Image (cartoon, rainbow, N blue to C red; front, side, top):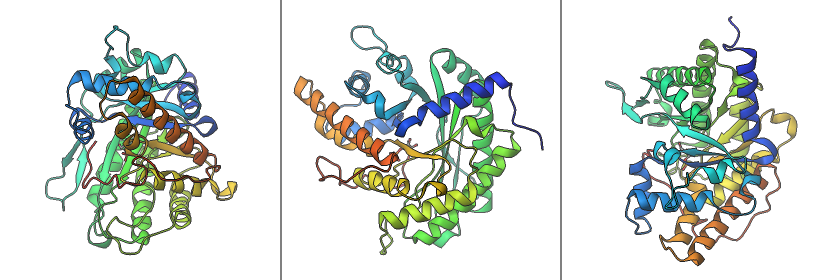
Length: 366
Ligand code: 13P
């Protein structure tokens, strides 16, 4: 088998970036909602989806004062945000880079149906990807994200071999292109929480999907030390009558990961996938209190909804300094709670804001 591709210097750079993002309990703020998706978030608080409002909201997130960099190692951005300036002409991302928070970029172009399959899909965006990655690296990005979506139907009859193979391969091709341009790829094979399947079915499917992903990454000579994995947690489907405790979710998830994810991979940064903010934090903590020898990788977070739901509510689209301050305080609180959970030191909290509200969106797109 050929060794991973790339020069010694390139590999060292990729490994450094990946490690830095998840150092000391840090995780990722996923703020890369496409224009359509952020529109849904803004409309939930009665705010119009225009460039000015998207700028105001993301500026609020990024300028959160005092110590966001202690819990957030990287922020994933949508193309517009990388180049967006505030009303004073300052790039929004300067508030992140000036305190050592790394910039990530969503490079996929969304999910499309796989013709002839049973309601399955793949993710497009490989054309011109190397050129786009080169430009993003020159413009300050250090990592990238590409989301693939798999759906459990009929107690695990899908994802089908066709769906699993196609998505594993496109993730590996994406990862290889990113690395060739100096970007750390976040490899995201999301198995949706939609459905009434049991936790056992979710575990079995997660293992099949991750095994295929790591086979494809190996076939494409991807340098695992310079990647991050962004999987779903292993949970029962949202409509399953039998719920699971954080300890059960932690055991099933870590078991599935141990069976399929090589220890060379430095960090697992989970998506929240429709869990409430509190569930996402509790389940993360439950994994990080398992014995250390079961966890050869950092286990952290890359949450979108579970870091932003209460923040949006606290902001409410208002320009008053009080609302902005409250929203930023809320972001700090969620980020700090998740950092503690990534260190296995989270002690729980009273639900406030939107923290215990369902963040489920059927058939979620990003
Ligand atoms: P959620 O945490 O809202 O699932 O999203 C994270 C993400 O980046 C999905 O691609």
